[in-house]
Image 1: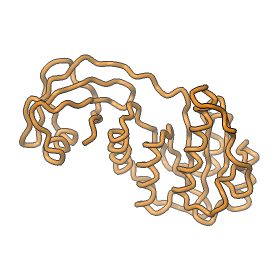
Image 2 (image 1 turned 180 degrees about the horizontal axis):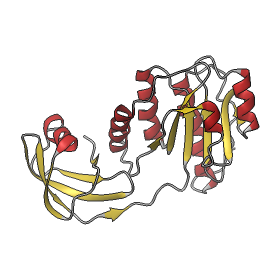
Image 3 (image 1 turned 60 degrees about the horizontal axis):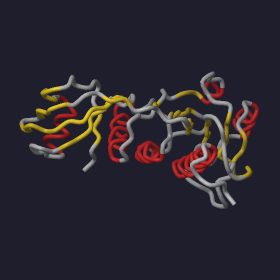
Image 4 (image 1 turned 45 degrees about the vertical axis):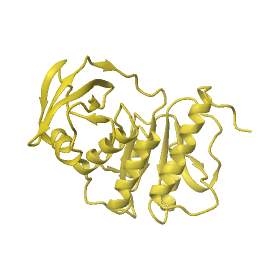
Length: 239
């Protein structure tokens, strides 16, 4: 059972009663018992330890401790992707959260036209995944964005990579935040690829095989996160 659970706002220290979706999940799905310990957090670095006093009827009474603050990650990775079929998009967000992706950008492209996003569903997916991997900060999920509009976003970091079979391998180290752009099944069109490169995205190879969108996103994200860890000096250089 995960030890970390997300609430919209943290309770004040002392005795309180949780209601709504978090309480229902704890009481009905997980069947917490008196004495069970957990960490409640708001997904923005604030958290507190709590102990169950009693549970039942979709409500959970707890004893909450003092609020503590967890610093955000030094390295933030943006991953933009053309959403695959919805169940696979859920898989991408779930495992991308566990890997450490900081910002998800679902995109409309010439070959993919999703009918809007699934933000309520995706919010539940990332909260559950963050709880399982003990992650204090929830990743951001942007609104579904047109590909051309995404390339003009001012918040994109200068380190930009395009998942591409013709690219060089991922860098061994990288300093500063980064963005990874992953195309739909069948890849970006030639005009989209050219526009991405013109916007500063450098082609990056992910191995000899053709990967599904969700697989490419995780492989590329893991490689860049590892490169950032090396740059921070917590891993030895790649030989």
